[in-house]
Image (cartoon, rainbow, N blue to C red; front, side, top):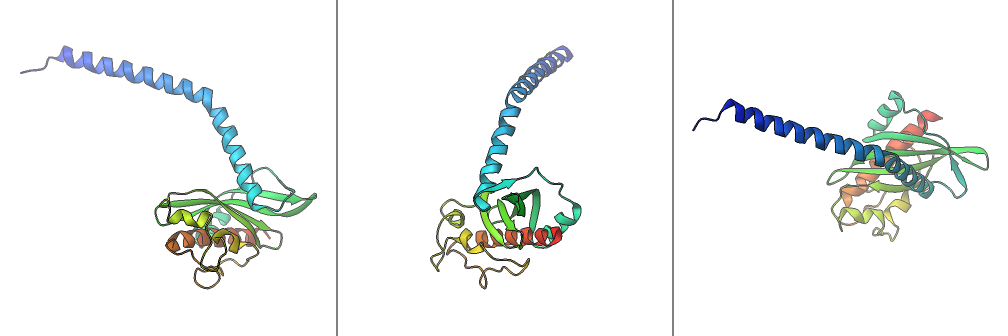
Length: 196
């Protein structure tokens, strides 16, 4: 059975029209929702920043992330994507950074607060692909010392000095996820060292 050229053109034309209509509808929906999505993302970022900075902190506009900062974070296994200045009582008091690092199942994205003395003020996991009930333990469960994993980073400083097994106690069954958080913390501290 031979398919005629007219039939092929008719099918191709129909598929093209359908594709154009779907693309126009997607563009229309995007134009309606993009501002709302950006607003929600900005609010979620502010919430995550508030969770890692001292109470009463105020956040400045997003700063430029330089190649030097990206390289410093990368040397410690992290990727710096956003950087915000923090003030408290009108005085400069540090930075909040959005950093990502590899976990056991994918990327862990976190906010890391660092004070003017280059010590961590808090870590908040923004998103992750860790196994539910295992890797997600780093977000809220205590380790063998009875301390929630993220809380043990508060007050620590020195890029590259944080290591699972010596300065950081992993949570049982989520060692790789804990290592991912630790890489992100070291990356943030390396960027803080650059910022002075």
